[in-house]
Length: 145
Image 1 (spheres, helix red, strand yellow):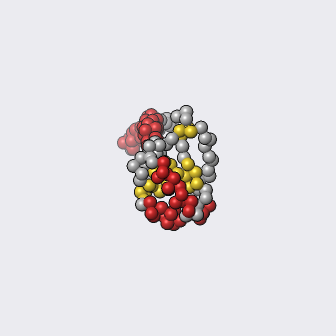
Image 2: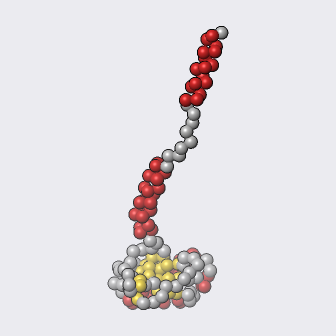
Image 3: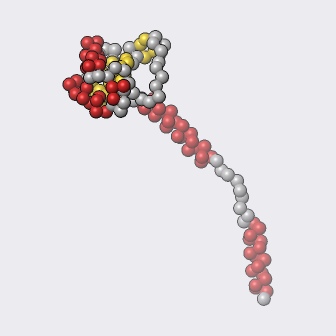
């Protein structure tokens, strides 16, 4: 019988010594959050949509838009892009008709590189207009950038 009692005493003293501590260690959480912050700070400038072009600078005010419009880009070499996909000039109207959600009321923004041939930009704009689209805008950068 003495062995049984000694065992119980040993168990009780062991339970009192090994109480759980309810402390929260937030150091790993802070480390993860700092790493994520750095990753997003580096990645954010790289998320600009579209083909990289050097836009002309103007004093025009920016337009507010509820959703992203279709964007046609003419780079410095005269290549034409819809969003980020290069397209032949002859297929421009057909491709815009195929992907426009609002038909001819769709907003279409033209982004022309400042060193692109102005005549090429006008040809693209005229092709879009003769295809029936009337809501066309030119994209520029503000002067103070």
